[in-house]
Image 1 (spheres, chains in turn red, yellow, green, blue):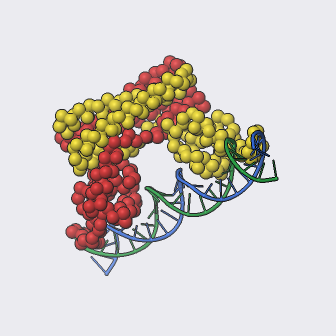
Image 2 (cartoon, rainbow over the protein chains, first blue to last red; image 1 turned 60 degrees about the vertical axis):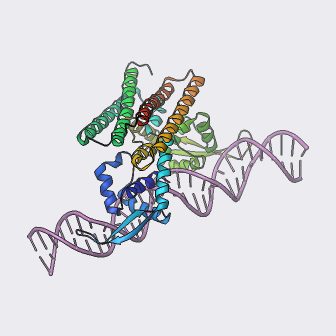
Image 3 (cartoon, each protein chain N blue to C red; image 1 turned 120 degrees about the vertical axis):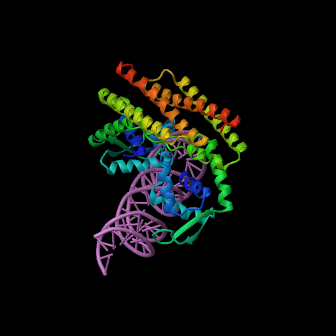
Length: 177
Length: 177
DNA sequence: CCCTGATATTCTAGTACTAGAATATATAAT
DNA sequence: ATTATATATTCTAGTACTAGAATATCAGGG
């Protein structure tokens, strides 16, 4: 199962949902911090999951305004797939191919002054990201333990990266690279 | 420019190459640690870059055995694109959507025993990866400063992740999550 | 002179989304 | 009535690879 499929299946596993509702849950929870599912992909993924027999749909009248909704709920097959995909995701460290290392591998090809500037931008962006995440978790507290852990994980990695990049920048400034 | 395109363009920027040669350089340098370009994609990417006017080709007789080679070299346009893409890669922290956080977000849906087991697997895999990287850098030393920095960056992040996961596992074992 | 194996490129048919437009329904305001 | 707005789904045409088979060339051994 792909990441995108698992992201959608997770939400249906929690409770029956229709496409538009999923979009709003993703938005409301800020899930785009850890998954990448565009609005236009949700319906595509729902259809894929339905074809795989992991979810099934029924039509339901809208409560407020708007046309009928197609509400999906998880099947037994889906439930099993959900658990095993979750276990797989938790047990295998995923490679993450950041453009950063690709950039680093090209360091010798660019003027040192510009490289330094770029690295400083990187640090600043990262620092903003860190601050935004810290603020976000602060506002939402108290949070369930596993959600707190997710933020803690992300923040730990960002902090480690910040520490490294600070060190590297001073090395570059000193002409050590 | 996409990551894959930049990876190929980097190599052509270094020296003129043909497709098969690129495959062997990628293999020899262990570049698949930080980029993802399958053999079957190399020719596709070369054509794309040529169409964009970033590289140009000429036919050349093979030195040893085998048919004529199509040797690509970088153009002025390509050179500029290479520098600016490298700067872009160095200045923008890329998001990395690991399946791990997706798994974490599904923690409540799975039996605690299995979750713990999965996390332990994760730790073991990560630990192996760390050891492999450490060994790799050790063997190859001495290395140019920027390459040393790339290994150092990767190792720092892996170590931070290891530290976090160890801590989290003990928390889970203690029933704190 | 054919065969093997290393070298080298091309082609076909997929996969997994993704952007954005088109379509449709219902409520509320003008 | 008309218009705007929020809700909701579907469709078309891409993008960016990617797997794997097909094809071709050439050197050296039998």
